[in-house]
Length: 353
Length: 157
Image (cartoon, rainbow over all chains, first blue to last red; front, side, top):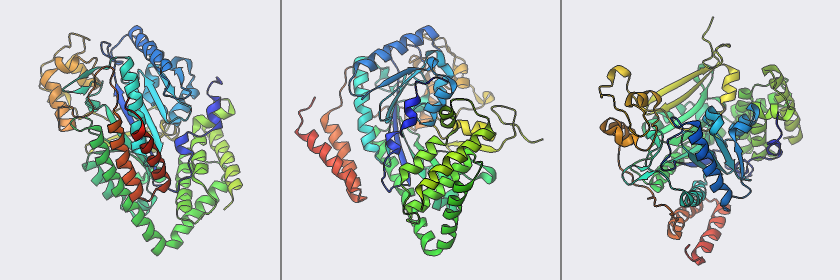
């Protein structure tokens, strides 16, 4: 296992390391898809052509100074666990490593900015901020896009806008998304109806469904679907309006829980605490599910000593690749679940409630 | 014996991972181990509303620039180069219209060597400030005010 990403294990990405009491909108992400004029796109280009694209972009990234302590990694120099660490930290997508021989990744010290080279498009620039700081993220994104776009020539047409590999990204090449933590809507059962509404309003939803079709961890990812025919600002405004509506609904349900079902709520969050503190084997999904309850408890003031960065730390470092990287070797599922429970037990005992 | 995981094909399905685009569900059935690996990470692009093969009536076309055919595009859902959009003509334009409800770009215009203007930044950040004040996010509002003040005194460039 190579050591070059070891420094990542010493800290949290900045967007997860904030102690704001906002726990419904965990993070906001914006991204642009861009391609360089005159080169074939990654799905058909030869490896030689893609490597030319790769080095050209790498040169540009090394020459700009608006990204603090930028680090650039060719994908072919990363081993499997290293690649997975980057995926777990939301710096890279899984698809980036499908064409490993000609792809690469750059990101900054804060891990707010990441640039994927030769994923589905030549360039994917993304910016992640905590909570709903979507404008801050967008401003940062356009600053970087401008800088790169002035040093090389993007593929662009007046009618179709920025030209992308997939027609779903044409036009602005822009997509915004948020991670939402909405446990009260799940507890009350209103989630089904809300998801239906969201989907019909053009929002794309992702989440994990376990047995009985329940989403795991009460976390869903919502993203915009339209990129053509609307400006970036219009896309953001429209998205914000829809997301604020869900947030309001979640808040209303939380109030209801406190007023009418406090006992049930208290039981749920203390049980989660009990399991996290005592379990001797913990799968990643069970961990995520239980951390959601802890987060809810902390947010509603049932747990006074729990800060969100601690919960985020558990969530990030409890993931499979993070555990394995820390141990320095590939672990079996059983070993992982055992070591995860050990790590969580230790951390949760340190907090006290 | 139950259904096997789509990815490793070795262990039984325990988790369903779903993505919903335009009301259509795309479901991946995975074992616990593979599902853990998929994580709630970032995805590249949502799936396309592409018709089944028998429904495609268009004649096949080949892009002279990259050699990709229209049928290959329907299968891969990715074009090969910027010229494909011209080469596939109406067949792809119909799809674009269906996805976005539009076929004309309205966002930021690109000219090589483009630079974002100060006014644009101010406009976006003022909107954020209004939000922050409304939602009583005072720390964020203060930061935004500082940035705006700095931006407004700075010369454009």
